[in-house]
Amino acid sequence: MALVSFVFGLIVGSFLNALIYRLGSCSRSIFDKDSVCPKCQHVLAWSDLIPVVSFFLLGGKCRYCRKKISRQYPLVELATGTIFLLIAQNFQFSIFNFQFLAQLVFACFLIVIFVYDLKHYLILDKVVLPAAILAAAYQLIAGQLLNGFYGALILSGFFWILYLLSRGRAIGFGDVKLGVFLGLLVPFPQTIALFFLSYMSGAVVSIILMAIGVKSLKDRLPFGTFLTFAAFVAMLWGEEFISWYFYQIGIR
Image 1 (cartoon, rainbow, N blue to C red):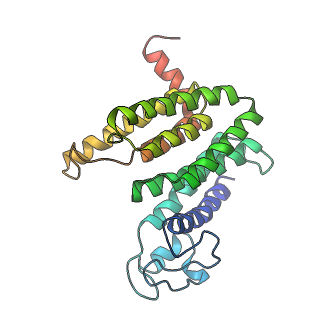
Image 2: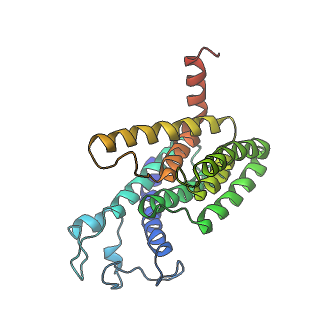
């Protein structure tokens, strides 16, 4: 089942790549049937769309215009496959397991938000708002809606205050709305793990980028990417992280 989950994730990752491209395109609808090369707009054949494999068989270049294909495509496909594999290992793999299927759906939302924010420094309402509604419905069914509300209040409330105090310089308002979705998705107390992990990962990446001269203190980073990364970790190992953290500070 691990292999099935990984391969299925590769296939879904290919569709997510197409969705991410179309969300940022003025000429393409997310409902368009055919996939095209982003550079020459040539319609791609099925053999051009095999996850990961096509990228390497084509030498990382479009078959038709010979321009380079972004490394985003195989990376997103591999990441989606890996995430689906981890979800299958942490939740009972079954097409009849509601929790398992829901985690796959939310993983897709997180991947789209992560990549789009990384590329465009923007969190789209048409992605995050439906995700928040679905997360609320999921927690209602799971009997965790109140804890989800607490999580959303903690994250979005903190980000809203930070947004106001910095006048939008520290974070964008999209991060405030993302906080609602993630707080619902990762309810209290796992929200604490998400909060700490997002700032820890952001600090580590910032230090590395400044050390190698890629970024300076004045530069902004897409904070949504760190939030979504932390959400993945909290979804899978949030309870373990909280237990470990409380143990470290002497609370047992």
